[in-house]
Amino acid sequence: QLQLQEAGPGLVKPSETLSLTCNVSGGSISSINYYWGWIRQPPGKGLEWIGSISHSGTTYYNPSLKSRLTIFEDTSKNDFSLNLGSVTAADTAVYYCARHSMFRFGVGAFDIWGQGTVVTVSS
Amino acid sequence: DIQMTQSPSSLSASVGDRVTITCRASQSVSIYLNWYQQKPGKAPKLLISAASSLQSGVPSRFSGGESGTDFTLTISSLQPEDFAIYYCQQSYSIPWTFGQGTRVEIK
Image (cartoon, rainbow over all chains, first blue to last red):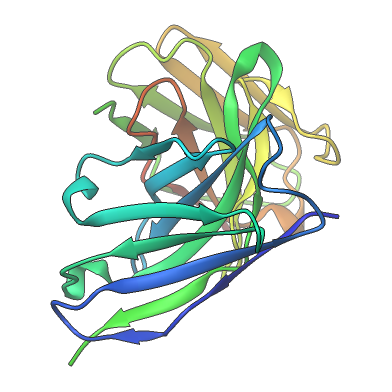
């Protein structure tokens, strides 16, 4: 059974880089049919897609974050990671990693999620 | 960006009630519309993909509909475990975007 688990520091200082890794078990991130993504949720607010990476390493970023964002994968460790630079308090959120699968008519959706990790930006 | 607007933002209902949540896209997303359920402190759970395809294991009291740029999530008979926040999400064009959520509360 596929499981995703986020890992990384819970506290990041303003202007520094937020780095998170999603460890994938029970399946390979190199599987052709899937993308792997990051979604965040500020306290008490809704969901925001951050970006995704395909099995071949192609990345797709939210334009609102693109200038600060890097998503990459390590197939040897079967994980993928997020670096978000120059963080501010507005980046405080629960960060989720998730698998993006293709369903009927080729419609993609996030079908398996990690439990989420809280990241606070504060000095 | 495609804006997804849900209505209502919250609703109160009783067990057994029929509940309908609407999601309107700012432009066509075809059927590239998904619904998620989120309970407090938990990750979202995919309920419906492609506007109306129920995910495996999701109770049949949940259903999705589509009419142009308007989409609906209906719960035919609300159960205690259905009290949660529901989000729509379009996967038609990047950036993929979510609605602001609809909180379903106990009356």
